[in-house]
Length: 448
Image (cartoon, rainbow, N blue to C red; front, side):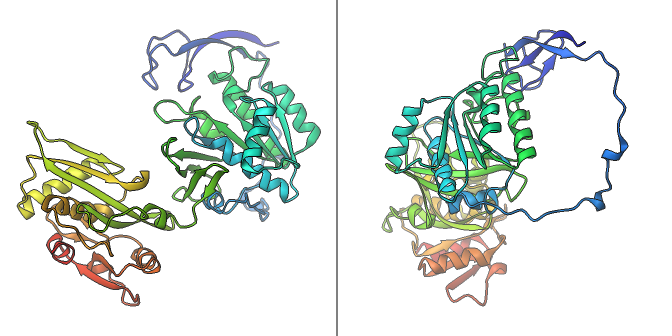
């Protein structure tokens, strides 16, 4: 017979301690330790059947047939489609469009003849129906279950045998056999494990929708992200229209791909040409703006880089970077001051990546530097040129990765020229290329 004992578990990260602590030593959160009772088995360790172990080279592999979700952007992030038996966790801020997207996904799967089950714990059936009508979802092939009890959900799964199921959201589901309210560490962990076991034993694809904390991480224990196969994050301002879907973890594909959607009245609409959307409002006569080609996984995306330089009224000038690395922007400003002799020490400098995009690769250095110089001199740069290159501390322009894809994207969208490092010049391309070895050469070409 199992004995029960008490332990204290952090509601933020899942750290367990034998005694109460005011501050969690794992995540440094205060007053998050809650007492929970656990069952400790008293029986001896059972004998292990060695026949359960097999040699790795004797394991047979089978080809996996992925199911298209109906959204090319989502399939790109997932690695080519939904893998049978996979568990996908999607997180994002309230109102960003998680439920809207996956309601449309299960509708697309149902139209392909798949049995789908949509479990809603936050809304009633009538509320889901209202959203479905607004999105143009007929719902004829979707089975809807408004339930939060995990035992009832498991019974429904065993009875219906769906190919795909959506849980909206995991923070509302609870197991009546455990102590604690829905959303606590033990409840989220146990319910997620139950859904994962069901997915692996039956081959059913499971989509789990989760809330995020104020820091942007998925609410619940960190082990939740280790349990599932894929972790997706929605980015973007919920008051805006652009949504970016990223994979923080993917056992069946790359984590470098992104999917771009636009929130409209009929729901989430995928953006097939993100470069055209992000550059659609660019003013060619304005100083302080230029075009850069970012590489998100295997996808090249043209982005507008903006900078504003103005005289500061403060003793310490402002340095603000939105969508760009703050420390890297400061390094670029220091290079411009030292190597070009620009007097930026008394100037407020604001750098912005239009469209809510975030740049992490150093290949955007040259574009940021050109935008700053253009704003400082009040002279527009050539808006028909795409700027690529990493800047070193001595002012040299260093080579970048995958220049062919970036050049091809610029040529496809009708740009006249590409300014890039000398070593990255592609001789087979038809678009005009200016190979530069330092920042002085780039400024001579772009800013007259």
